[in-house]
Length: 157
Image 1 (cartoon, one colour):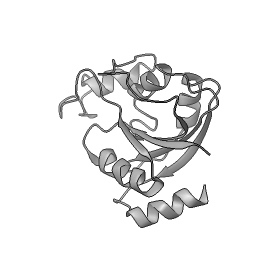
Image 2 (cartoon, rainbow, N blue to C red):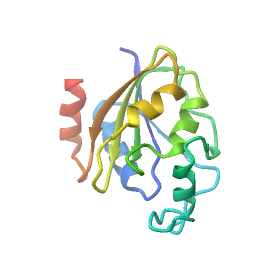
Image 3 (tube, rainbow, N blue to C red):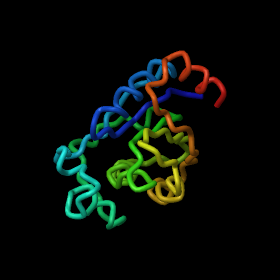
Image 4 (tube, one colour):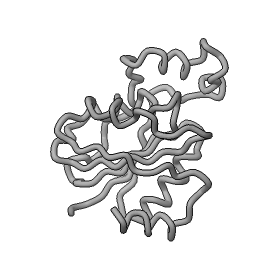
């Protein structure tokens, strides 16, 4: 297996910290998926039907713009792709990321942080955005797992 990349989207910082530890555990490169317009606390208020995240998640075709498209996907064979679970699936910016690159022949292993829900239909929602890739449901990584625990998980894959 070639080089490994940990790519992640983190709106509040929780997924970011997990991704950093996973990159260390997997001896992987790290890339942050950054929206062109950062999310504010008000944007993330899922109780407000007019909040940015609610509006985006109610329209599964919506694609938030990325701040950059500089991820070196071509040099990596295995990509751990992380995000918070929003409405039982990945945020639509993850689809934007996947649709911005050619993932043909790549293995994409999903990981997520969540306040309580599981992966739901996340694989089914993301797979059409990266034709030619193998997308696998990985693991919910809640509770700040240690580098040692993450290393054991990566070794079992």
